Image (cartoon, rainbow, N blue to C red; front, side, top):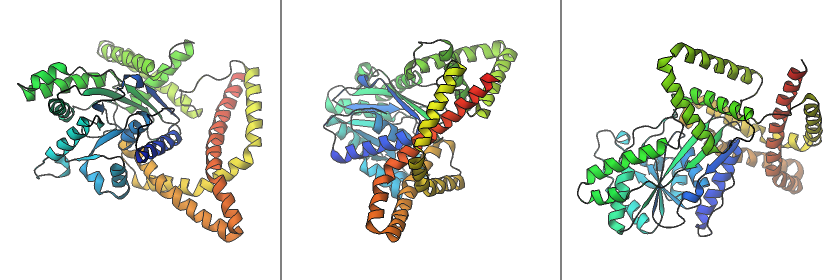
Length: 423
């Protein structure tokens, strides 16, 4: 992810944003941000996004959006040790929800007052208007909180408050180094008529603006029945691009293609159910073949001829062989926290929408602990010089090992492709 930021960000937020970018760049294979130019550089702003990936969603937006964001977060998060500290670090505002305190009266007047005050200071509020994270790639019914916040802030400031919809689209969101994330920033939602209506009919204005926001968010995401359908759709899209060299590859164009294809799928399914079912079965078989070959179906096409593929494989193989010692050290020094993270997440069995969050939080716990233990062993075995060498090589070796393993997987896939071509 390559996203710049304004020089006016506070130091603590700049640090948080940098850490979020590093963690997400390590976890996800690719992150694309489209439409940053649609964000106003200053002035009161509400960023409203869909919510499918628990705490990864706000981290992704903090990393991707150049302005400082003040998240609205459910109150129970502030009582958790690590997550609560991160929420306070980000300057988040707690929100009380009925499901968090069954039978208790809910009063969010203080939350609205804080959020309006931040907007009056020309800050940017981050809100997930669905009010809950859920794993399926579809938009849940929106709560009216985002609309009511904007309308109250506009009345308090006497000026416009910009409302920007952001669609978050994930492919394999919980898979380390296989997942992809798209951040699709839309045009600001028109609000002037709703602000005028709010003076006479506040509830009607909130409902109207909420529905308008829902339409804007639906236009930025791919609403599939489930994640499996979205995965098959992404494979079809990649196949189409492979057959049409020079076609658009940015996330916005690919999202638009998948939206059109889904509309056709939903239209044709009741008209020709047997043919549509057969076509889906063929795509599923193709996806299974890709999985058996160690492919995802989303990779760019490899070398076009067997000779070019052999040259490429030999060149990559030589590079991998020369880098083996440093990669081996990086893999060995990170094997313990990697396995501890894997076992811990496996034992927890998190829901699909918190899988990535669980892996990231477990990694943030186990990796530093393992590094401290390994540093202690290095100090005991070789004194200060070995400890210094361990610390200096720790992160570079880890990043090199990560790159080396990815290139090794790619070489393996391409070699299988050569053998299949020759056969």
